[in-house]
Image (cartoon, rainbow, N blue to C red; front, side, top):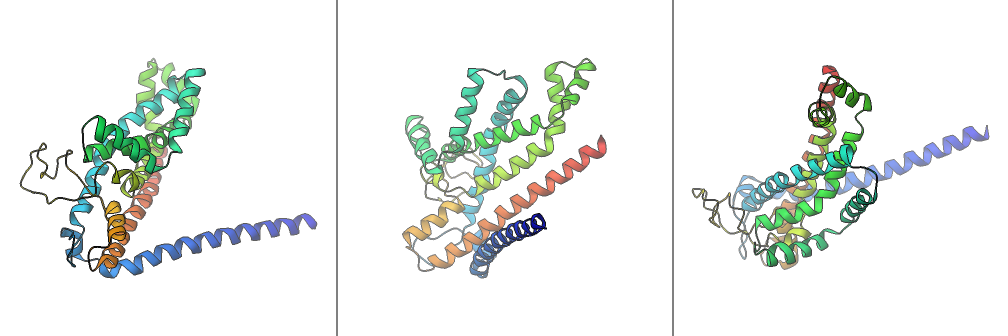
Length: 295
């Protein structure tokens, strides 16, 4: 009887904790959306920002956020995939492997502002890239690479060893087994991790303040020269993102409608981050169902 009472008490405590967490998160999300959505319209989403006058939008900042996300993923996905495959399939137990894992753990715990300062000293100053999308993408790669590498490694390790043995028994080489058997089986987890990392990249601000810059120059949408700083596809131009814009508007407060712009920008940012997270769950379930049905 005593054990049953303790079990009910523990269950009640756990449910209470879960309820409190859900209430806090729901209240936070609703507060941001209710405060910001009334200021969001088509003009706000497409027009350029204003430095001193009211009525500006976040069109360029929103585009910069997506463009920077794409460039970052183009760099970080191949690197994290290769590193994850090495650690899961080829790395032998020893000092080198332990050292690599220790480095990954240390990098994953670094604050984003430290990564931003590192990116400023290395990519902006030493490499001479200046405040640019390239500098920001490289800094975000350093910031997200440990997490993405661990995700790839864990996804590969969750593939049962019989899958590898079956591939080898069919005469496939070790690399062919990894490429044609292990990676497809681990694909749902890998893709889910990439989408979740995309949300983290999209909402990052501290690392980009020191690398991508705090200004959003006007873009010439007819200029497709990637070396021109006015081109929308140039990686050598400064690019204030939506998250950095929120910080800048709140910290400087030079425009009359700073509160409205900040609230609207925060609502947009939250919506996209929620979409990234929901998409990750949906894509992961779809891929898992497809792989399971195919098996």
